[in-house]
Structure formats: C-alpha cells, structure tokens
Image (cartoon, rainbow, N blue to C red; front, side, top):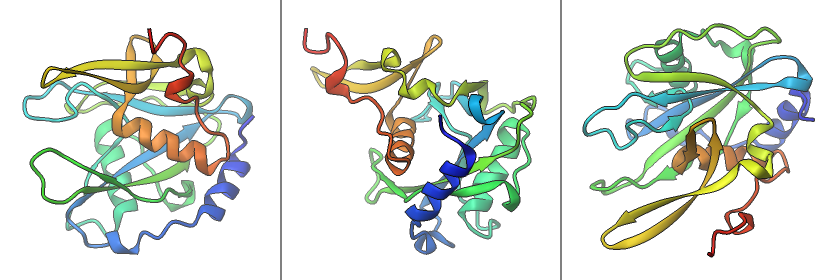
Length: 206
C-alpha cells in the first residue's frame, strides 16, 4: 500500500533540480493530484478534447499545460492549469514534492519541450471535477491501477510503413501511453516500485 507519507518521503529524497525552468518559456507542467483515504488513493486523469493540430488530441493525460510568463514558476503553471481544466484549486500546502524534469521531443522543434510534474494530495474526500473546453473527460483512477499487471498492454501504431509498439496501460476503454506513461514510470521509479515492463506483456511478440 502506498501511503501519503511514503510518497512524500520518496519525493523529498528524490530532490530534483528545477531552477533551470524558472522563467523558461519552452516548458510545460502537469499535476499528479491524489485524493482519498490512504488505503484507496486515487489519481486525477483526463482525456484531452479532440483538436486539430494538437499532437495530444484525444490522449489520456494529467492536468497541465504550457508555462506562461505570468507564472512565478512551473508549480504555479501546474496549479493554474489544473484549476482551468478541472476546477480544482491547488496550493503549496497540498504539495508532496516534484519529479525530475523530462525532455520531450516534438516533431518540427529544434529543442525539446521540458516537462515538469508536481505531486499533490488534497485529502480523503473525492472532489467533483468541473471540465473546461480543453478536456473531454476526467476520471479519479485508483492509484494502484498502473501497477496491476493485467492492465499493462501495448499500443500498435503504423508510421512510414513501419509498425511501432508503445507500452501502455489500459484504463476503461482508453490507453495511457507516451508522455503521460513516462511521468507515471518516473513516479513509480522514485517510489521504488517500478511499473510492469513492455517485455513482460503476454503475447507481445506473437
């Protein structure tokens, strides 16, 4: 069982360096928002709205978005975007810690987009989510869900005549993969409880 205190302690020991993000426009932030009693923690997940030209159109994601010059730092970005997208108000008292930044390569960009993730706990009550136009659906997913081996799968995509396999986590009728899965994988590594690996998925090589 993952307790809030264990998560806080693991993140404190992790101690990522985030100062290089402050004031940096080529970056974005997401929030990992936990709620519920200690033995049944849940994580806020969203499915982004379908939008032409958006590389993450329709994808499962964590609330978040691009840094704005008005944001004091990337934690503020995560908190502002969370309020805009799902109506939750986060403040410093809710923060458990942060993850090390991830460099995200996007097609057509000369340099990577730096992604910052902050982790929050809002308490035992499960709040209602109020969605804006950027979000098609939102869920309170059991935090244990990504670690259940039966939920590990893969996404098969075709590009330039090649078939590509991406590790994924099945949730309801959706797939969690790509950048969001990278964030969850980093989180699991920081906790010392790695997620199931792609090569462990039965039948992948068939």
